[in-house]
Image (cartoon, rainbow, N blue to C red; front, side):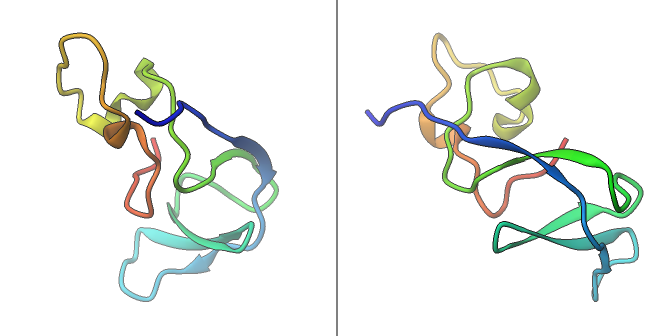
Length: 90
C-alpha cells in the first residue's frame, strides 16, 4: 500500500483562455499544467487551491466526488483518492 500524501497550494488565477471545444470551459496554466475549469467558476486574480496530479487526497467529504460518493466498508482505496488528469474540480 502506498503512502497517503497530498500537496495543495494556494494560487492566484491568471489568464483564462477559451476552451476550443466547449463554451462553458476555460483553460488555465498552473505550475506547468494546463487545467480545465468552468468559465463561470473563476476570474483573473481569484485565489484557488491547486492539488498536484498524482497526489493522494484524504478520505474526507470534500473529495468524495472522486469516488462518486461510492460507499466503501472502511477505507476508500488509494486509487480512488488519487488526483489525475481526469479529476473534476468541485
